[in-house]
Image 1: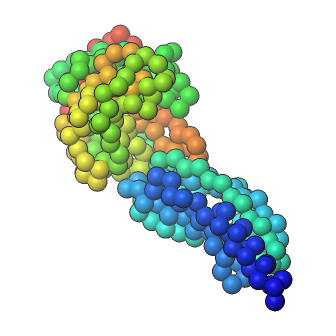
Image 2: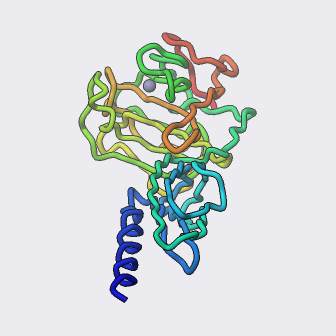
Image 3: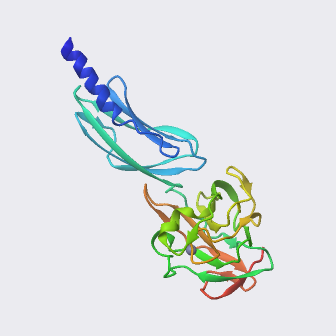
Length: 272
Ligand SMILES: [Zn+2]
């Protein structure tokens, strides 16, 4: 009897170690059912996420190969793994990482974006695709537009606002400021995301959950975060795996026709 009780405690202890605290709205938890351990994932965010999950275990048999990646829709819950208990003294340890967006998003390459500023005005590109200063890796296809602080930022494409930050007034030419950028992230109908970054303090005019139209005024530019000076950093991307994302080269409409590759030092006039 004492033996049995001890075993029971051990199981509880093991299971406790795999119950993760809610990490910014995404949690993946394991619980013991009758003859199995069931892993359930919950996403409380207003955007889809891509989760990478791995585990190590003893005396359990999983119903799928590990590690694995999965997409969890906004505000959703799903069972992602079941492990059959082979012996009562099993052990289970797991780890997960997640990224905003769906890895399964397929960018509509026929879409021509609007330049993200007021119609009939021009801005100069200060860093284009593959820019040496900071547009490489995950940010390869970002574009920086030189913009005086307080310039109106307009949606380059319609969608749903999924994340914003507007409380920062810190910024400078160092990666140390990376987390201080104010920004707006919009989810497009093809599930890709666009982020408009370095906005000025309180320079966000839209709310999470709001539908925005192409060409809608959404905020005001600034120099918060990792920025040498005032500009707008615009990037379209999707999740790659649980830790990273891939940026997407997009086309813009301008008075000179379709811009495939915004060139550093060149001015582009916005048209609808
Ligand atoms: Zn940039």
